[in-house]
Length: 284
Image (cartoon, rainbow, N blue to C red; front, side, top):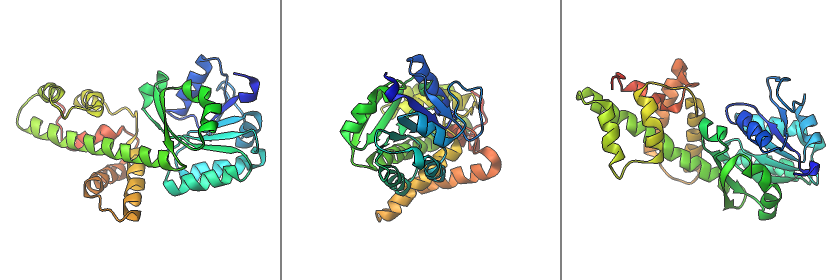
């Protein structure tokens, strides 16, 4: 990649740090910034403005819409033609449109580009990006996204990638919720949870989520790959979209209530599969 396409990563959490490592592994040498200073990080810059000044492609991996918009406000003086912001945080649809307006108002380009895939996928450069925006903008920055992904899906007009990320997370959260209940019944009836795992693997209801999460749920290993608090955040955004669309979402509402109760009890930093803790004695 030419120096004119130097990438920058803003936000060095579970995903951002691993994306930066994937870029380095591909020889791309990204600049980096994080709210909590990490001067030992390769490519460290001391401010969002410096990151935007030094890089032509800036990819965001921060917590929420407030963080995204606050970060962009600090970058604005350094944004303009020739710069592209890739917004990969999962935020609300309204905040996605607000972020796009801020960036494009400077003459810079903007991509709505959330991802699917948790810690292990990020470590292996196997994320999947959902991308909305101008196809030519995607093509210009494709080498940066390809460095940390196995697939890139162009979704359509601005905001459509955010919507698709939120609705697919709806499915993930409700699958884990019902898995927790099913495993609870299994354990209560004295059946080994490994038998439930084997039965589901042979059933049409098996899914990528069930295959990924059941082993750690049986082991009561809730090391965060995707935290409960972040899944709750995404569920809240989806419920908001449902309300705006005149739709009732009773299944997601119940799962979100359960996640909210667990987050209030201090379990928000654990993996969202910690929902199983409400049901299981953790004996396989």
